[in-house]
Image (cartoon, rainbow, N blue to C red; front, side):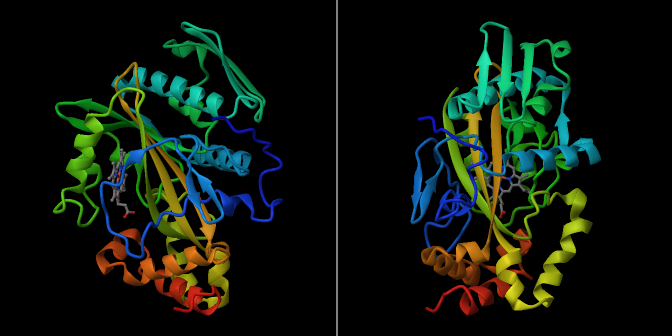
Amino acid sequence: MSTTIDLEALGDSAAIPDRIARFPFPFPRDTYRYSTNVEPAGSVVETPVGGWGTHPVDVDGRYREDLAERTRILAEDPTRFQALPHMEIAQWDAMLTLMRMLTDAHPETFSLDGDGAARRFTNRALGVEQSFVFGDPSTLPEPPLLFVGRHLQEDVVLLDQREGALWGDAGLVTFAADWSLRFDVGMSFLQIHGPVPRVHTEGVIPRAQQFLMGLQPGRQYRRTNWSLSVDRRLDQSTETYPVWGRDRRLLAEGPLEDVGRRLNLRVEVQHLVRLGVSGAIMFLIRTYLLPFEDIARVPEWAERLCRVLEELPEDMADYKGITRTREPGVRWLRTYGGVRS
Ligand code: HEM
């Protein structure tokens, strides 16, 4: 199904603002534990106020703002794009697949013309038109993954499959939640997940890798992950920790009234796609941030978030970097957010 979007109209105009109506609230129950939580992609997940999940690439009312932020980050730190030399064909494969996804989702905004190797991509929202020949780097102004990354709000990691394992060998990641692509590039799937507590003894990561290695071309799966962020800061990569790290302490020490406005539930919708030409796995990470005061407009969400935060074991809270912020978050939800039980 394709939806018609008007980029200017999206935002706060409706009774329930778009940012709430389309928010991917991630908790199906009152407790949260790690699991191999993957499901087929493409169907809409309904919520009490709307739904999400129609397309693997999601263009919303923050499109231009998010892409301007990506451009700023890349100008300051070009290492947010990484690609090992053997990932050249996977980059082209990913670029074409992402262009098709954008066109399928929003044909009025994006188009991809031509067939065979010679193509033309048009993005009417940004006023970009680019002709290129698939596989010929001289026809693009920059590497294919970097080029297409300037047209979508998702971060992208490409995984090579060899020697019975997956390897994170390329990526464009400007909105990481406390990790670093520059540090992780070239690592195996198991190594990348090394810092995560619990998942190793519980077999979550080896099971996920087995599942991904069996993924058939064209099949798309998705999962969610979550954390808390102070303010609407998409870039929380390890590289910029000095900029955002202290805000957690400052928020916890500041007035409780400010928490509803400043503390955000940070949700990643992640899509997993096997690319047809290169055989690489494409991992899309889309980050949504919603302040607690917006969460509180949906009573079911406020109750559930409060219970999840109260119950979350210490080691998981520690790893997620929310040991300082979850307590003020819970207090705000109970004091101002309508949570009584
Ligand atoms: C973190 C599971 C796919 C990269 C995590 C965490 C879990 C997890 C449970 C901890 C999250 C948190 O508490 O905030 C899974 C599962 C997957 C999957 C079940 C597939 C079914 C991937 C893929 C990549 C990836 C394909 C691409 C390279 C990462 C990274 C982190 C992470 C970079 C942060 C690690 C750090 O702290 O340095 N993953 N993941 N994941 N995952 Fe995955």
